[in-house]
Length: 86
Image 1: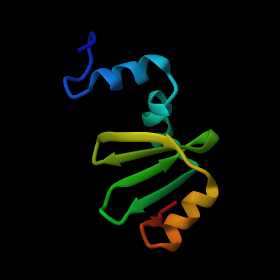
Image 2: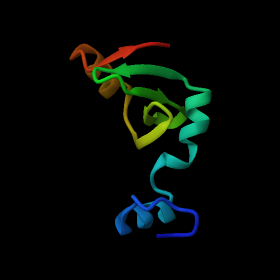
Image 3: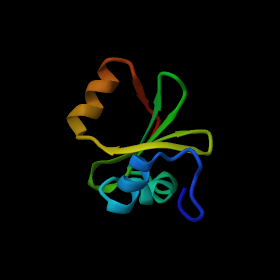
């Protein structure tokens, strides 16, 4: 476990975190100032930031972050997996 890190993060997770290849560092900033907001069919909230950054939250807990195209987001809406909130 790294200094100040979560015990839940795996060695692979730490490696990805150090590489800065995923948009997790901006998750809370994007949540507080999103470009789009969705509710997932299981109640989790999806916040979309700049440059296709997508962050999943369950309550105050940040789950994964990834990048997703507008087309992919629209497909989730059409399938009923996401409902646009804002």
